[in-house]
Length: 326
Image (cartoon, rainbow, N blue to C red; front, side, top):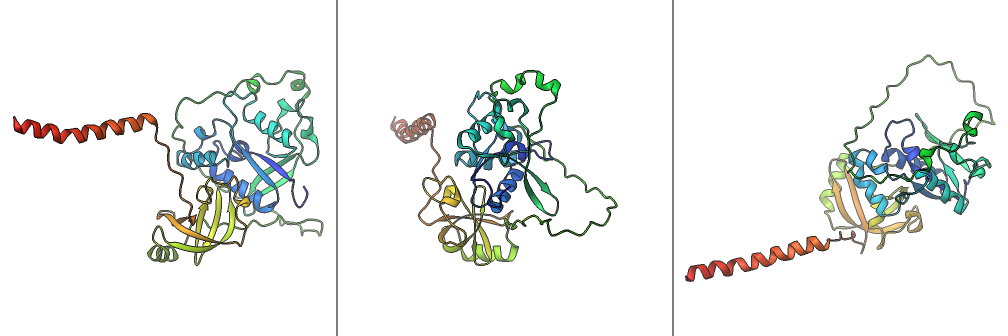
């Protein structure tokens, strides 16, 4: 893979979020996308998930997932799309000539998209212990002769079912126990072997003392200045003195930008307003000065009910007075 990476990649989000797991994890997907963006900062990234993704992740991640969909940080195929999420990933990549980041081989689609076998069009990614995410060019696995003689899977060609029930209470996958084994001493690395590029760790939680001092000096609504430290999948982290604050896309501009890289640059000084605190995570959300969170729309039915309730309350005192006169 070129040092600068491809110009544009389409990330098969459902595939990376399930790598090494039985159920998809939005946190794992965020870590993978962030690692790729740090390693290849000049590459445009489009993240696609299938239509059932929000119903299979942990219930604690659903709110963050919905915000990512609303801000176009994650893209899901339209209802009834032929080929499900895989077909949508391939359609986007074919349209813009992008590479695909996935560990899938898309065997049932190989006759339709022969460019999958072109160099650089398919990139695999795996989390490596003590290293982080590692990305490498790969070639798709061809189906066996017996399978290739058959037609494409019927299941892959059916329209994507539209979920009718809310997301179930997903259980967090248990952590795998480390495997203890006697390893032989590794051979010394040669000059031709290059170590993977280290990924800069992102601080998402502050130490207790600096966090408490910041909260005491800067209540919600206070104006502060910070420096853009690193990008995330849904915004940027900004350093303000001794603490790290989070600036989400929805509080970056109105309307929210499609990508943080298009709006702010690393090392840029920004004027901010403290938006909220989450004590359990010792996290601090901030907004660009002059930008407020988008207001939630009130449905016409809800507005009508509120209006009728207000009308009844205003009429109630008059009825009581009339009853006393009698």
